[in-house]
Amino acid sequence: MPTNQVSLDCFTTINDDKVVSRELEGEAVMLNLESGVYFGLDEVGTRIWALIQEHGSLRKVFELLQREYDIAPSTLESDLLRLVEELRAKGLVTVSGCSGAL
Image (cartoon, rainbow, N blue to C red):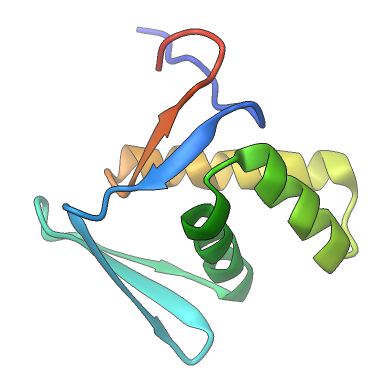
């Protein structure tokens, strides 16, 4: 069954009722309370997590990351969207507002 793609036009929210997260030495560790599965993020992933919490808009997150990191826009977009897909698959975030239903 095909899954609709996450895009920069999407909004992402942390599933606060299902997720506990803590930052430890510049890296984030999250626990999905429903599945009992831990998920860790490196320094850049932790920054993305914080920006998602603050803004929700993936376009805004992308724009802020472009200012902070020296990376090709296409690589940044690909990496950001891949991480959001992974977070969604783990039940840590909800994605909405995209063209097409998710």
